[in-house]
Every structure is written in structure tokens, then in C-alpha cells.
Image 1 (cartoon, rainbow, N blue to C red):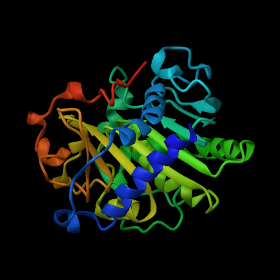
Image 2: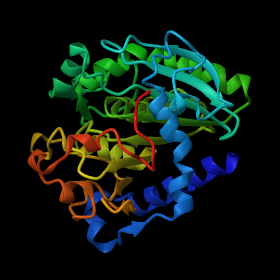
Image 3: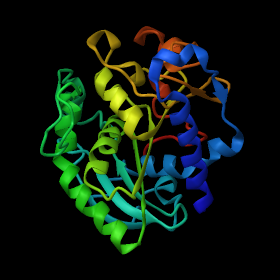
Length: 300
């Protein structure tokens, strides 16, 4: 129902407001546990992120499994990608959430091109033609940026079409793993090209770090982002901070107990948050990467 996106957006707004100033005020803020209702408000978007693995470029019917069909009223608009050089993506409108949805596929580990995208750790500036007016001090993972650039114009066209067709002023970006990184780049890219009265909300899962400190600060100042990490997932702690990478604020960490804790600031080092809980990859568990996220495993 529409109340779900309002609840999720409200949760994201609370996380955003509590974390706007980043790591500097982390110690002055309390880590809070989300209520059952707040956790449930994210579930439709978890299903949307999972559905991006269902090869939507070959079918807009999402007839490949329960995760892909969980949001039964969804109305597809466009899709693309090849699962390797360009991750699968889709755009559509969900009347139950009253929002246009943009979803990106995560890393396909069977495809070496996707792995090479993740492995390009060099940071550089954003493409000024896609990101006009963005400061040159902002740098991002060039593999992620290259992958994003391949689909960005088509996604923008599809989003504008969906907003117009459904008289909507809401866009929700979702993704898991590499798809989460692409969704975060969309969180910067799309508002630069959409009407100022369109609200863009981002919900990601198992998101790697995407850019430098200035990038994280820009996201905190201009976007509404919630990035959800599951237990001892290693992906959210890479690329390492020693390489200059920083997460934006908005982390929610799922504990081994199943509770969801909102962690204020950027890269909160509390052991209730991913950086403190997983100080290095040797303390991680790769099996946590796909979930479950409130009972949902990523993939078809």
C-alpha cells in the first residue's frame, strides 16, 4: 500500500536527518532499533531489488519465481542490460507504493565482466555530461561509474516516461551488491535531470563503498539513502577506507539476532554496525551477502 512507501520514506528521512553531518557526530547519537513496522515497510523494495536478477531485459512479466512476483500490481515500463558489461535493470510503476521504481541487478559472479567491474578500484571524477555541476573533488569507483554510464540515459528516459504516464512525483531506487552501487550513483544522477518537485528515495542492500569522502558528504547533503547490511556480509566493507573510500550515512545493520539497527554517521565503528562488526574480510561470512533481508534472499 501507499503507506508502505511513506513509512519507508519516513524511516529514511529519520536516518538522513540523524546522520546529515556524517561521522563527526556519530558518538553523540544513539544507535536505534527499528520497529517491526519500520522493517516491514522495506520489504516491497527488497523484492524489487531481488527481481532485478530475473533477466528483465528478456521479459517484462517477471514470471520466474516468488521474489519476482511478490509485488503483483507492478507495471513495467522499460528494461535493459546484458548481465555482464551492463547489469540488468528495469523501470516501472508500482501503484501499491505510489512510486516509480528503478532497480539494478547485482554482480553476476558467473560473468567475468561483472567481476572486472568490481575489481576496478581506481577512483576518478564523475562524467560532467551525466553529472553537470558536480565538484571535481568528488571521486568514485571508475568501474561502477563506467557500468552506470552505460544505462543512465536509457533509465532517465524511462523514468521520465513513467512519471508522466502515472502523474507521479516519486522515484524509488533499489539494488543489491553492485546494483546497490549503481542505485547510489542514480541517487546523485537522476535529481540533476528531473524536476525539482520529484522526490527520490534510495534503498540498497549489501552495498559496497562507491566514492570518496566528498562523494559521501554530497550524498548526505542531497539524497535520501538507506543502505541495509546483513550480519557479517563482507561486501559493505570494500573497497577499504585505507583506499580513500567512504560510505554515506543511512546504514541499517541486521544483527545475528534478527534485529535491525540504524547506525548514525558515516562508517560507524560501533560493533552494532558493519564496520565494527566486520573489521576485515577474515571476520566476514560471504553467505550473508544474499540475505535473508526480513526473510527475503536475493535472486530468482
